[in-house]
Amino acid sequence: MLGLGFMRNLKSPPAFLFPSLVSFISVSLSQFSLAMVPFFFASSSLLSMLAISVLVFAALLFLSAAVFGRCFRQLLGISASAPAFVFFNVLFIWGVYLSVIRQGIPSLEDVVFNAECALLMIGLYSILSSDPGLVADGYSCLDRYDRCSFSEDNPHFVDEELSTNSAFCEQLNVMIEENAPLSKRVRYCNICKAYIRGFDHHCPAFGNCIGQNNYLLFMALLVGFVITEVSYVVYSAQFIMKSQNMQYIRLENSLSGNLAISTMLFSLLQVLWQVVFLIWHIYCVCFNIKTDEWINWKKYPEFQLIVQSQPGQPIPEMRYRNPYHKGIISNTKEFLKMEE
Image (tube, rainbow, N blue to C red; front, side, top):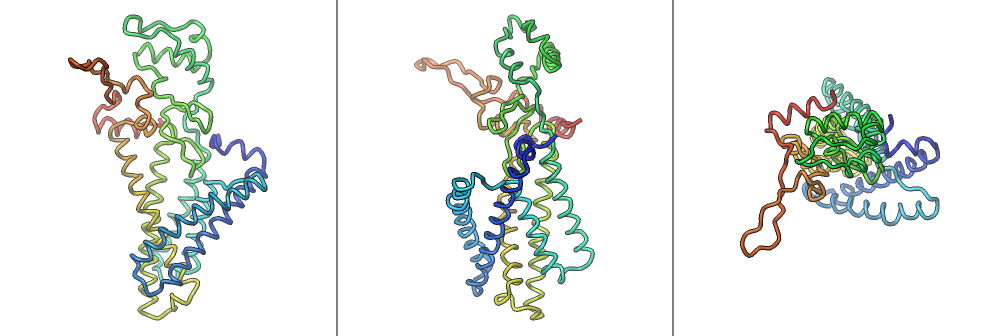
């Protein structure tokens, strides 16, 4: 099935094509604006250019969202598509590599980088079209489950209507009998308006929820982005150094040279935040915790540990606990078997 967030748009071609067109324009303007940094600051160091690029990119994001995007929404009723924005950025970087950087890269490394970009494209389509773990009829089932008398005194009682509602509810009954209610890790996505099994977060960049069925794919794709962008930074740096030493092109006076420098800085910026994001998700895997659960743990009773109040403290204290943590090795094995 298609990603929940994108599925509705694809039913109407204009609703899909127009946001993609807006994203294409945004990517083009932002990338060529970043190319002006090495043009106007040719004498600056790469570290200084990186800092300037951060400011320029932040300003471009603000203008795109507050000015450019708002105008399109108000005048035409359309807005940019985040997945298309990611796609066109990858395509732009790949295009700069093929037209500029490639000529200074050995054949084997050239094959490797092109394979990395191709795999990224395949991964983007796969994550967009994946089922994150959609729970059919989850809303009615979970609402009735909340009204069931499930407690330590009566742990096996299930509403008769719940037990005959659907296949999902039959599975829910089995899980309850095993004293591990399925609903405890089925969360509601406010963006997709759906219940997702193993819900971690809704990823706007990939246009889909990240849940039990596609979390492993999400992690692989995130690693793929980091590897590809690091490769591009290395290859573009090699090209720039070789060009300066051999005077192949005058980088400061050439659009292709400016694009080589600006896309290298752009890729480096992406790597910096994506590595932090990747480390966070590795932590989540090791401790068997979802992003949504970590942020909103006070909403979920199983994460709440009520500590009896001390003398002089009339209100009991609520602390965080993770009932799903089984040890790093066991958690990692569970993650790797997640989609089986």
